[in-house]
Each structure stands twice: as C-alpha cells, then as structure tokens.
Length: 216
Image (cartoon, rainbow, N blue to C red; front, side, top):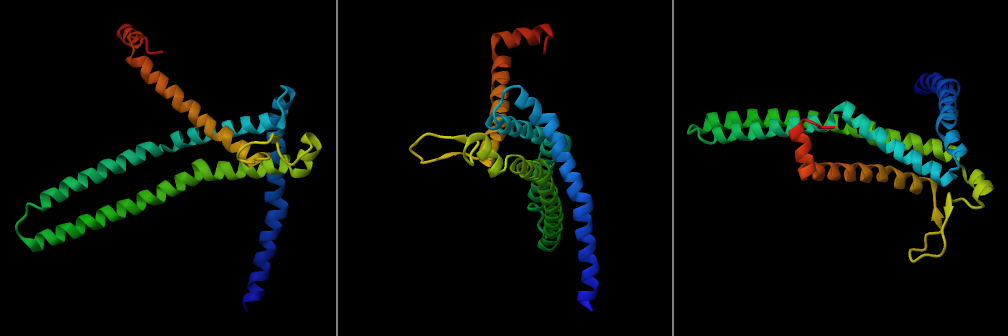
C-alpha cells in the first residue's frame, strides 16, 4: 500500500524539482552573473576579487535582513520580560503562605518557559533567514559559476588565488574561504565605522556638532 502512495508523490516532487525549481534557480543564477559578476569582471576584478566582493555584499544583506526582522529589538524585549519576571518572583518570596507561593512560582515558571520557547523558535528562524540561507545559497551559486574546471581554465589551479609557500601550508584560497573573508570583512568594516562614529561624538568636534544641531 505504501509504495503505491509514495511513487506518485516522488514523481510529483521530481517534476517540481526538474521543471520548476531548477529552471528558476538557473535563471536567477544567470541574472546574478549579469547584474553582479559581469560588471565586476569588466571593472578588472579577478575571480578572487569578484568572490570577495560578493561575500561583502552578502554580509551587508545579512545586516539588512537582521534590521528588517528587528532581531535586536526582540532580544531586548525578551530580556526586559525576563527581568520583569525576576522582579515578580522577588515579590513571591515575600509571601508567607507556602501553598500560595508554590502555585505562583509554578505559574511564573510556566509563563517564562512558554515565552522562552517562543523566543528560541523565533531566534532560530531569524538566524536561518539572516545568515544560513543567504550564505548557503550564495556559496552554491558561486561553486557553480566558479567550478573547479572553470577555475583551472582561468587561474591554472582549483583555487581562486594560489599562494606561495607559507607557514600554515595553505596552497591557495578556495571559493568558500574567499567568500567568508569578504563576508566577515563587511562586519569588521561596520564595527570599525561604529567605533569611529562613537569616538567622533565624544570628541570636541562631535560635541560642537551636537550643540549646533548638526547631527549629519
């Protein structure tokens, strides 16, 4: 009975994969090549530079998605809720009747557990949408564009950038490694800009701008 039911479902999934998902993925990949990689190539960037820039763009995309999902605000809201629950429990400790105290403790624990499970579920979903999905999809696309065969034709090796002899015996920079260098570089640049901005606000020049109402 089960094989007769599973066969049509498998055929349907295979048809969807072959006739819908695969053509759409190929079209999107070709579109990204035209929009992103071709201008970078025409600007004189090597495959190494192209993948590095793509990594930085995906890092920027992750930051934008995080802001749109308001992940930081949700984390702050849960922290405030947790602090409020702790204050309630401090009040429960002042009750003399241990039966009432027990009931209130159990109710409080159930509430915080429910909120915590909801928070973890949302946080996991946000993590997937913000980081995992953009990274994995982009790496899959880049590995198709810069396949080992294509890299061998362009660079003479399977690496984007072949390295000379070095203490860590790293023969070259692969597509994933180059991508992550670009990806984390975008966060480093953002952090540096944030630190410099804070220092500027604390400096006499920043104080002068604030006094004049010039926040730009």
